Length: 210
Image (cartoon, rainbow, N blue to C red; front, top):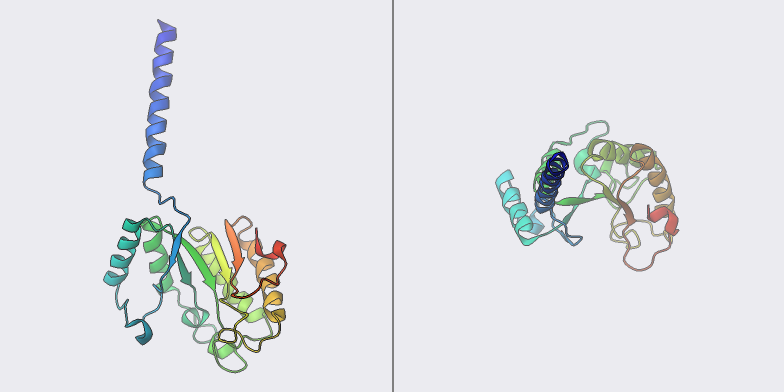
């Protein structure tokens, strides 16, 4: 009788645990495929698609319904620190929270130069002194490390559209090495780390993949 009772108790616990795990899995979008949608931008070139919280919520709800597992989000330095030392994460706090609540993973892009730090006062001309960028990148990852586990550095730095002057990727690789080392101190075990180039991969593999 005691053995039967123990067996029934163990069976009940096992079924309960299985049901809990199944429910948790059901609530998570288990899909490695994602979309590139500029949720963080509201400009004339995208017809001011996201003027308010309601428009963001609608778009993200549709992504969830479609089974989207990831969305790319640029954590633009110019947006976050338009003037040196004046940092505002409010927009990104709201966006990260909204995506997290909808179980959609984020591929965070650390990108571009803020006007005040650029020698040419423009977004696609990075400062050769990486210290400014490192401070910005460290701040972003420190703030969102619990909700963003995938990071990418810059966008298409092998294109003159996004990185000047073109130097055979030397400047980018130097930045990548420094950012990688700094961010590993903040989050030693992120899920993923990558570069973003359009023609050839010239940076060492062990720098790009965790």
